[in-house]
Length: 337
Length: 227
Image (cartoon, rainbow over all chains, first blue to last red; front, side, top):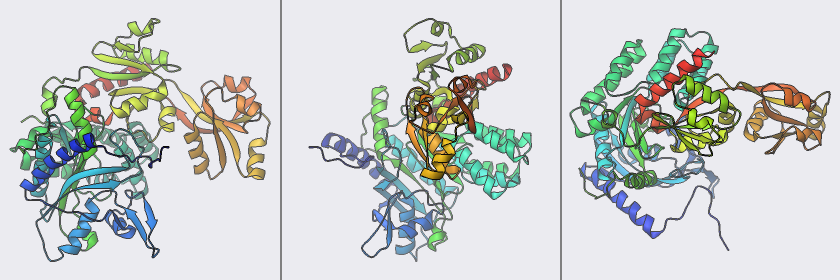
């Protein structure tokens, strides 16, 4: 008789677990070497605490009541719990605080390869260091983490979370229409974006063209100049923020992994300023992401700048296997650099 | 300093893979590819092969409804399929880059001509029974318009369902309207308009930007030239 487990969850047997453990050890060693200290937080939190971190509350999908009738939720990432932890436990310290974690989180996704409802994230949070230095440090650690797990071909996309919110406001588009357009942009539904903009009537053809072109600008740092030429204050501000981040990493080893991407949007509600995403050519899904969330700590009563990233452990594992198949990967050595 | 190492050195992945829809969109798709300068001669024969060389692009043929699956997973970098398929599989994370303009049709709610069972079922039984190959589009449509429906998924000729009493109406794709007419059905509501779309894998869109933009631009020009 087979006793089922819920969809999107799975058992891990020794062969796989051994490889996952090795992968995790390689990552932790990099984080540790950069002065980040490991933390763990409860898997379940009060729903209202998680909701405080992400206003749209898109993340938490599993909620239930405890014996007192309080509403609990399974965390959907580690960034909000760590923001809470920093506010609670380091109330008198302005940082910099450096934390890392390797923990499970939960989302109601459609289960498929490398995408489960229970998954493991390995990542860092750097609290108290503003842009661009803080962002540069975090991207540098991310680059070394990818080196350490043997994903030599992995690419880090670098964009700006505030670009479109500010640009759409600058174009005089009202709040309600803005959020729908942002969703189109995040999904890269260019056909829907164009027709929705046209329907608004208030946006000129030239501005529609600008938005569409901007969302497609990705590549070497030269695309910043192309973006800049498209004009407007919001674009100006975003490109100069990205430029500052780029300059802070340009002379470091991670630079050759970084691709500027004006079309980047992360779907978690707390990002501001720089955002990153991680890709590997051997796999079709995103390996991780992160960025700045300078207003998140303030929601927990501490007004501190912060940045971080999270890598999906199981997806990294899939990418490693695919790279090995493609003949270009190497076994994780557990050594940094 | 160059941005991405992979963008200046030749990639190991080989040519871009483009997923193509067999079926109703097939002929127009071949024409669109011809106009975009992609080699289609080998596909036009009665070959049973599934994979063809398009001259710099690898062409992979499949059912239209499988295109988002292959593209989302990255097994194909790009794909062509109908908006109807994308609407039904709206949780597939693919980038929708281009409206190719052909394969125009409408997703509609249809009922038997002169027959009031749609309204009557809703009024007296609380829900209308709808047969469809697009259960998620149908459910979303009734939900958004504040009505209750019992959606019945069928795989074959949907027109049959209201004729022999499986359903009060159907949600289906209509191009010319002839099939509806011949089965004594009529359009009651339009739900969406559909044409062929170019979709891309999210990672391929980022990592093979130059090649992908170039192919997309050729298809855009080809589709604009034919309108």
